[in-house]
Length: 154
Length: 157
Image 1 (cartoon, rainbow over the protein chains, first blue to last red):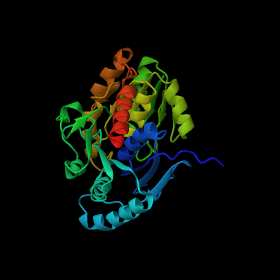
Image 2 (cartoon, chains in turn red, purple; image 1 turned 60 degrees about the vertical axis):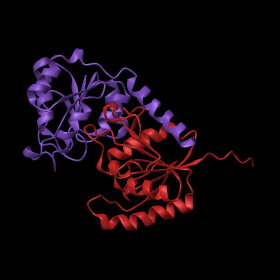
Image 3 (cartoon, each protein chain N blue to C red; image 1 turned 180 degrees about the vertical axis):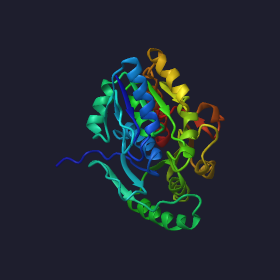
Image 4 (cartoon, rainbow over the protein chains, first blue to last red; image 1 turned 90 degrees about the vertical axis):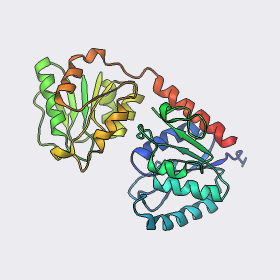
């Protein structure tokens, strides 16, 4: 059997709900160029057949002690999957993944949720200056330097 | 044809009633997805819940979508190039656990093809000028394409 040329691997991670909807819409456009592995904290979620999804612990920035087991889960996933890049739309678990990606020297991309129109999200502020690429979905929140606006899911 | 959808988590009787009464007074056809709501529409059709297929069918047949402030409905409507009016649930009226739908209206209203109402008056004003409500003109797709093209480049950089 012919082996197909291997696509670079992407780890896509977000919280459930609106963050996840945005993440999947972005990834739908990337799927032809990348092999995408997902991580999301929702055990009840039923993925479509094509998607490979790791279930992780749900954390918010308010319960910081849970960030530690979440970080270990993500570390295991990263060491196993060896993604070329990590992309997240938020919130806290995505921020943890970006921090780990920085340590492991994996390229990291943060897309701040479209729901954050007045100011950047709390998780976004945590990874600002740490993610290799930091995107907002609102032009007026961009500073043209480390906070970029290049488009939006809607 | 107007398609009202309140999501699956909670009822939103107020919204269903406003649209039902407006359709009755203006001889307009409509269908509503009302969840476990107590108010049963008198003038338009309704179902409590819909499968995704049935939901999409109604959405594509409608000229106008009216929805609670849920991201899923907004994305679906914008992708289908349908104008959508969004109304927020109010915590004070016991319609939701918190007021995040009210906060959401702020950004939703800035999206192309998305109109927002927080009161009955605002909703009726929008309904009375229904033919002026315009869908997003392919703009949503191009904004998303620009974003993902940039991300694609950024990963390889």
